[in-house]
Structures are given as structure tokens and as C-alpha cells.
Length: 177
Image (cartoon, rainbow, N blue to C red; front, side, top):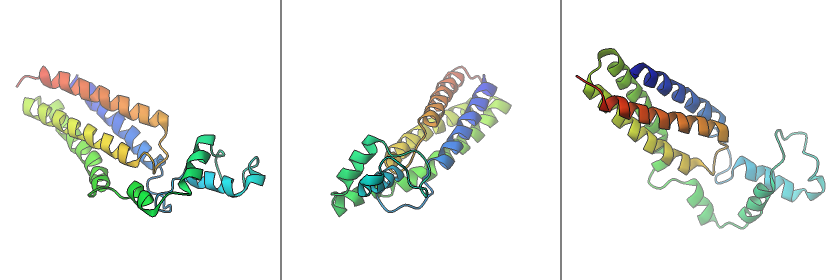
């Protein structure tokens, strides 16, 4: 069971890396403006060409929801825009560091448990999995408006993490030694 958890943990980590690289978090955008809002604002400014996408813009046209959000965002006050883009007390930066760090360290402890079957290593890895899950949820909530998350990758990463957490708990409960 320890090997299965180890493999599932690694699979979840690979889905998380794919999610990180495809989310658009590293791309430079004006503060407080998502890519969908930018595309929707362009469509609002050019109603005559709403049916045909411009040649320089790649991807699908913005949805009606994105257009509504962009039209409302035109009237946002600077304080509202700043509150959406700046993290409170550096929480966003903290979880961007803590989530992958705790996951990697927890994976290392679980590898140690899989090799020597020491109960302390199992509980340490499980505790780190709990911290990792909390940091991951906080990271997702703090970035859900500023990134283009793939719903499929979110589902794969989240369900893999939940299954890893449950199996690690069951394995740690039954661990001897």
C-alpha cells in the first residue's frame, strides 16, 4: 500500500506541475486584469468585429460571461482592483512557496516510510500532506481570478490529492514499527 501511495503522490505532483505551467500565472498582465477580461474588453471596444476574431489574438472568443465581467470591470475603482490583485499580508506568495515545498518534503518522508516502514515517517508524511492540501486550496482560492485554470487538470490534481490523502491516512493508521 505504501508503494501505491508513493506512485499516486508522484502522479498528483506531475498533474500539479502541468497545472502550474498551463495556468498562466507566470505570464505578465496588467494588474487586476485576467486574460479573459482583456479579450472581452477588446470585444466591447470593437463591436463591429465581434463576430470575427482579430488575426493577432489566438484562442476562442470570450464568452458572454467574460464580456459581462469585463463591462462591469470598466467601472471598478482603483481600490477594488488593488484588493483583487494584491494578496493580504503576502498570503499568495506564502502558499506559492509552501504548497510545492510541503508536497516535495512529504513525498520524501513517504519514500522513507516505504523503504523502512517507520511509523513516525508515515505520520510525518501524512501531516505534511494535510498542510499541503490546505496550502493548495488557499493557493487556488487566491489565484482563481488571475489565472486560466483547466477544469480537467484541477479535477485530476484535486482528486489525486484527495485519494493520496485518504490512502496515506489509512496506511499510517495501520503502520507498525
